[in-house]
Length: 114
Image 1 (cartoon, rainbow, N blue to C red):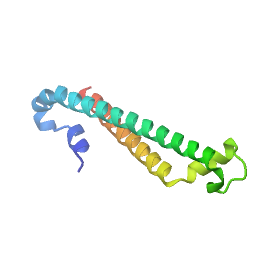
Image 2 (cartoon, rainbow, N blue to C red):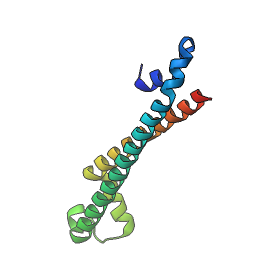
Image 3 (tube, one colour):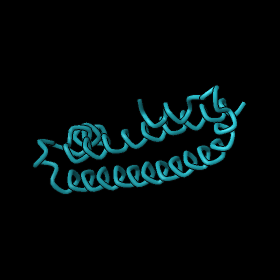
Image 4 (cartoon, helix red, strand yellow):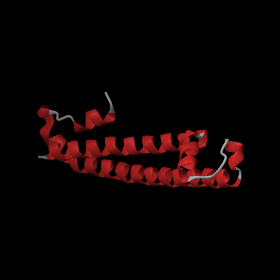
């Protein structure tokens, strides 16, 4: 069972303990969410940098990429298949997923409080 599942589960036999833990759990997940947002933002910045670097390299050395002429569509297609870009995109997507899971856990804690 994940930590999230343990934290959002209600022990009906110990409601007094559940009540005292609630604020610290909300704080814990608030901090985790803030950290995940920072991680997501850094991953997005890295994705943008990788994309810009590949874009510039394509414009300078378009023949190396098998292009006869440089068009925005061609650049976009080449970037979408570059390994560095795909790795940065995967990192960004993973950070977004992590953030969404944490936000879901915090929402569950809000429901638990009610």
